[in-house]
Image 1 (cartoon, rainbow, N blue to C red):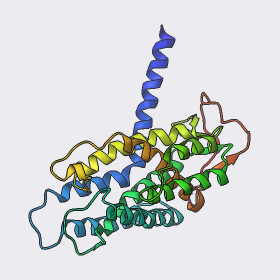
Image 2: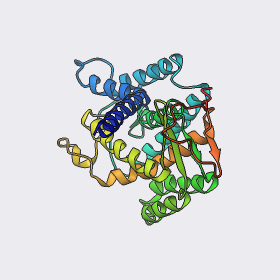
Image 3: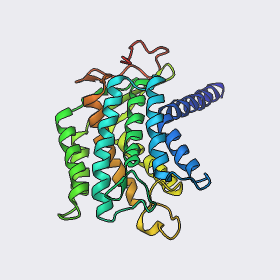
Image 4: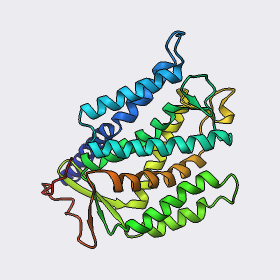
Length: 281
């Protein structure tokens, strides 16, 4: 009985620790979303809300860099994700997938420039997770994963004109990441899970965050223009695929590259200490 209680207490403590670390990983995204939500509460101003959010996003990026949340190359990786996100937004808004109904000076082809910060926030989460949770990858096939991730990104841009291949691509991603494990630290203990499962879990929480973002007025889907409605669950699957694009970009561009292993097992998760260090850049 005592052993069971100790195990239950340990599991609860680890879950709390995991939640705290995840909150730290989401610091940029949470601050961005809070700023967007707060902008809706402001009284009428001579400056458009979207323009204010852009200025806030730039300021938040500078603060994050100054505070040491990201290394210099992490910031570069996040900037690339921002630019790719803007390209994604330009195509999607033009095709009517969603819209930014308010006016702003900093809108280009219907897309406010702050739109790229949504994708930058996801990249920030990946970068901070790699550092704070000391991620290690076992049997990671970089070439195959990168190729499928690139196809995923292109498919989400081109499926308006050619057949949507997201289901075949989901199977291809499952095959590319089969046998790939991501090891992570919670306190002094090491755990691991399949990389594909990590993509699915992150996709789910991104879908939850998307519901919060659309409620806060970050953007609107067609069915939300007359009143907020939950984002369709199908977007959960889309995010589970798109997170692979961010992961691959950060893997290639971030200064704190994960340690790759072709077969060496992860440290025993019962080990009382984590002996390996993680380069923070």
